[in-house]
Length: 450
Ligand code: NDP
Ligand code: 2IT
Image 1 (spheres, rainbow, N blue to C red):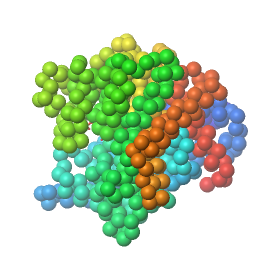
Image 2 (cartoon, helix red, strand yellow):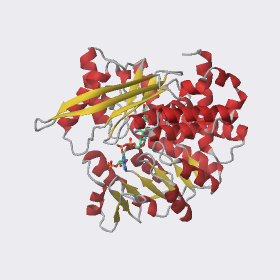
Image 3 (cartoon, helix red, strand yellow):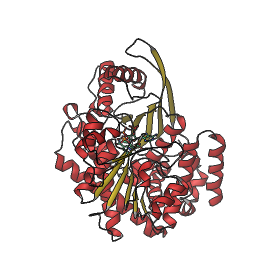
Image 4 (cartoon, rainbow, N blue to C red):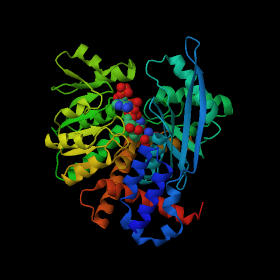
């Protein structure tokens, strides 16, 4: 059976040789599926894995826009509708200068299994653009979003494909995207995008959901392994949406968050991070994290050096939460964190740990909460936003938070069931892959060869 998996992997690598991140994500999932595929010879007969690794549809388009000085720019837009087997395509949009097809495909592929794990009826997709939002005015962001939606609107809909935010796309961008969609369609289809502001159909707790959900999952995992989160030292890579609300929940749980970062460098505050100041710098002023020193001159700032371990991972911590970007932790960084006494890693970002580093952590008894499971709270709450939009109703903060917690506990239980059924030890990454895959594979078998 390994032969079938190896065969599919070779084909994926040959066909997508220039898509490094996509091949990495496919390898990470497929090489853990052997025990499931062994039990189901019909998967090979129906080319189930070959179908699963080929997106149902890839959309690429031109995004022209005019900056404040009148200069015309052209970016590339993407939407990869990877799998609609269990529900409408669902997944975020990323605006970042390094976006390319490989990155959007890896994110879309991961999203299939993550969305299945939530237990909610959502398929997997991802989109975005190589547009760099840093340093752009609000008007430039608006014009870019409008141009992006001029094309994207043909391909999305509340029963078809429902985008949301990701890196570089938050409530501001979703607002501009929604406005343009509404104008073009001349209809109020609130459920076409999630992550909306509360005033026009957003859900309470969506903003906090990924970070809170990560900590709900971490709490389950740590408790199971006899680790009390209280008073543990935490460092967080990133200072965006996921990082900020992971920090908030970690603090509420009694942990001590001492470091956060952005792509330039990291701040270390031995007294514990002042999160209100981070929110002011990042959510309101949109400045660099170094700004933190102005109010906290005793904190330390370390610049990232190209090709070296990101500065935030140099700081010893018991719990480490990568909440920035993919491949943030390689083998060398994993060795450093382990040497410095890390007990657990919680993946807030998508694929922040490369395959060698995952293996190293597992072999060295470091717990790792895998992204597909641990950061699923964001998309799960997006699905709750869709439900509220369909009902033309909204739930209270407590109701949504309660549902989110329940979903994260259930995801943890699904992982545990796979661990027990397949004897996976502490390999939560394999467990999440298997649990997500089983649901998608059954749905695909039911629906025939499509
Ligand atoms: P934001 O744009 O709000 O924040 C991104 C953070 O990561 C910033 O601090 C940013 O620093 C840093 N970062 C981004 N790219 C890089 C890079 N190439 N190198 C170093 N640092 C980088 O995004 P989110 O918080 O929404 O997303 C963070 C991660 O979480 C992503 O991997 C995303 O896919 C994942 N995720 C997000 C969900 C959501 O609901 N938003 C749900 C599930 C996962 P800087 O400002 O300097 O670029
Ligand atoms: O990676 C992710 O799960 C997200 N960026 C959230 C997607 C969503 O549809 O809310």
